[in-house]
Each structure stands twice: as structure tokens, then as C-alpha cells.
Image (cartoon, rainbow, N blue to C red; front, side, top):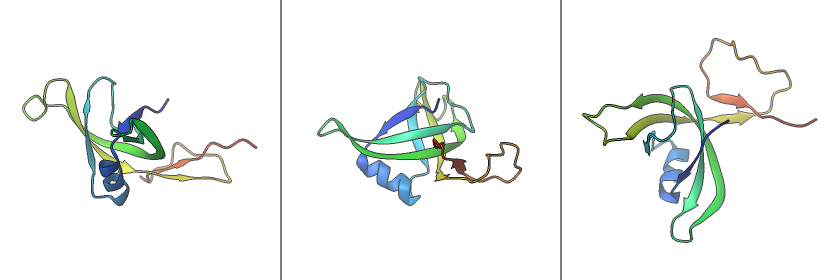
Length: 106
């Protein structure tokens, strides 16, 4: 299961553009390097989701009380590209890329 997190529109746009490469979060979920996260754009003024979302890969987690508030972490993230593949996904490939297969029904 891929955790789904809220993100405000101004931050969402910066993640998509590559300008924002980290998120600061409560450590209420056991995040790990290598996890995929779904960031769902949420408008706090209207208290509704916009319908926009982005899949990101967790590259690094800083969980050090010297730099983070209690129960908080800073996660380095990279947006992913979702691709549809004609061949089965190979989880053993050795190149690092941030594309993930799109699950489709045939």
C-alpha cells in the first residue's frame, strides 16, 4: 500500500517543478528510504482535495532530534514517472530510475 499524504497547492506545484525536493512530516507512519508516497493536493481554504496527485520516491530521511522537532522527519523526495509497460516489470533491474509500472486491467 502506498501512503497518501495531503499537500497544499503552493507546495504541490513546487514538487512538480522540481523546486521542492523535501517534505517535513509527522513521523506517524514508518516511512523508509525507497518508499513511494502519493501527494494529494489539498486546498485548506475550501477543505477539499483538488483531484491532482503526484507519486514521489523517498530518497533520504532525516530523523535527528538535533535538526528535527520531536516526532517530525524531513524526507528528501523525487517525483516519479508512471509508465505503462508492454512487458512485465522487472524489480531486479540494476539501474536507478524513478519510473514505476502502471497497473492496468486487460
